[in-house]
Amino acid sequence: MNHFDYRDGVLHAEDVSLMDIAASVATPFYCYSTATLERHYRVFSEAFADVPATICYALKANGNIAVVRTFADLGAGADVVSGGELRQAMAAGVTPTKIVFSGVGKTAEEVGLGLDEGIMQFNVESLPELEAIAAIAQARGQCASVALRVNPDVDALTHEKISTGKSHNKFGIAMDDVAATCARCAELPGIDLVGLAVHIGSQLTDLGPFEAAFERLAHMVRDLRDQGYAMRRLDLGGGLGIQYKDETPPSPAAYAAMVKRVTKDLDCELILEPGRMIVGNAGVLVSRVVYVKESAGRRFVIVDTAMNDLPRPALYGAYHDIELVAAPAVDAVIAPADVVGPICESGDTFALERPLPPVSAGDLIAFRTAGAYGAIMASSYNMRPLVPEVLVTGERFAVIRRRPDYDEMVRLETLPDWLSNAPARDKGANAPARGRGVT
Image (cartoon, rainbow, N blue to C red; front, side, top):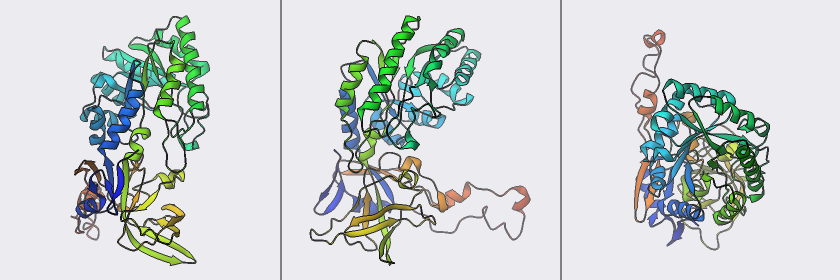
């Protein structure tokens, strides 16, 4: 369920017309619904309300500070994978003792930041990382809570670029090495081993791979306890899929029932890290048609958003529903169209031969289910400003990340001293940009 629907023939976010936002903010822009964010978080968290569980929202799906604050106000923690995300979570008001730091390449600076902030735990993915964290914690006279991320060698049955639980993936500690790594934890000062962690991938639409991985972890918890290790926590990661096209992902209730069945006799605190599941269809990307081009029997709808704004189709061949913001006539003739952006890359394509009604220059279109891995993955390729983000609640909306102007973008670059005095070039990057800024 989401809160984007047509009213009087115009697509709305809750009670706000997307046309009104476009008139105020200009296109392209991302728009998120607070009501959808809150509903999806509650549905997920309530499914685990009868067991000891901490819900740590995965910032990598959408790290906007207003989105994270929305979840923090509902009691959420955070799953972060960089020092930047840790700072973002803190700025959004997430309680440090509800923050989990994941990722295979934590730097010494990032580990130090996590220790200083007193986060819940580091999910450790290798022996070298474990030893580095121990050394940093010992030097500071601190103790780091760690969970060992296990690679269970389970096929997530998802896209190869977002699968993380097979033995050939870079993530986690091989199952055969976990016992020895636990023994090393016991030898290292500055380390408190609190449990195990797992995350096998993203956009899973079948409970089977989850259950297989969780069963392996549950068995490992029992074995490690027999060897004298406490194993107080079990971090089960995220990855629950959503519907983009014709997928039928399991409900949070079905997912929770499976988790509770597998872990019922372990007496572990659970950590869950949903991301896409609670933000994915809470957002849309609104764009304006620039041209409609007929060529060699094909219709090209050229829009003002591009692969740098919404990278998923170019990266993964991902599907997003595309709708006109002004509803077409009921008898409109539907015909195939290629929806493409302005970047000089053939990969700057959102849809091929997508059935669409008649479209004209100036029309607004919406890419649905764009709340996850959209704005967070955007870049300024082709010197295109980052797309603004808008949050709606009821009849109100606010810009929660503004579009930078070209002057700001140019000021990030400087000429080195051996070029700065060149008379033919000193009117370039260091000179004020004179192009009109963008709202």
